[in-house]
Length: 309
Image 1 (cartoon, rainbow, N blue to C red):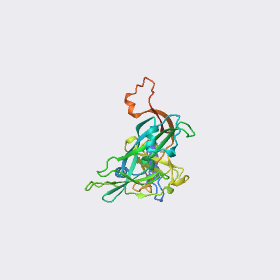
Image 2 (cartoon, helix red, strand yellow):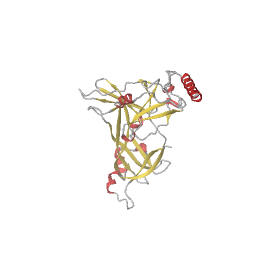
Image 3 (spheres, rainbow, N blue to C red):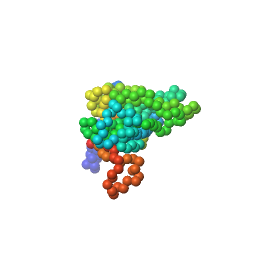
Image 4 (cartoon, rainbow, N blue to C red):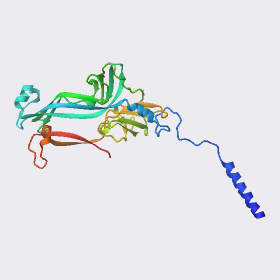
């Protein structure tokens, strides 16, 4: 009986020791204190509502430019400075209508009850008026001249109104401002109403969100900032996986918590490889026999392939 009693005494003492060692200090939730810096960790609260609101201000833009291309025989002695419209038609060995298209993202930034303002990248809407191609690398023998006939800019999901106009374009910084005069009594468009942040305050590891239309679909992606403040013109790098259509997408960072979104930049470029190739006249694509050699008119084209690694 004494042995059994002793066992109960020892057990009671162990329970007492464990209880006395228990602490009442709260467990850290992982959230950081406000320090005025952009956050470099996942938000401790959901940001879905904020992103849903932002998504209504981000739209897809499709730009299409039409060109008439004049082709010249290889032995020509044509000088660019002496070219005229009549001269093009007389000296050409053939002509064709071609087009170039680019898709990107715009952000709705302004509305005064009539005029809607939008921001995107300059390279999305900027098509050359005239394009020259040459037979030789020294550019002494002119192969073709492509002259822009017209350009169409279309932003999906906007109320009715006039055609979209280019108000201002800054090729150096790759920024363009567009506008559209809306019809009377249309539904008020949603405008991005966020504090404009400072890219110079971004740091190594700052957490950012990018929202746009890669490959034509509205998507949001997250990324980490690298090399802040080391490039010209307040440009910063991220590890985001870009696809065609992401250009013009707004970039957001959180300063001191999930509810403090700031607009810190715009996605504009990715690392690419340029591929040069020959392509047939687009008007005859439907009748080309892929099993036979092609002996029709060919054009030199260039395509950019994004590097993902």
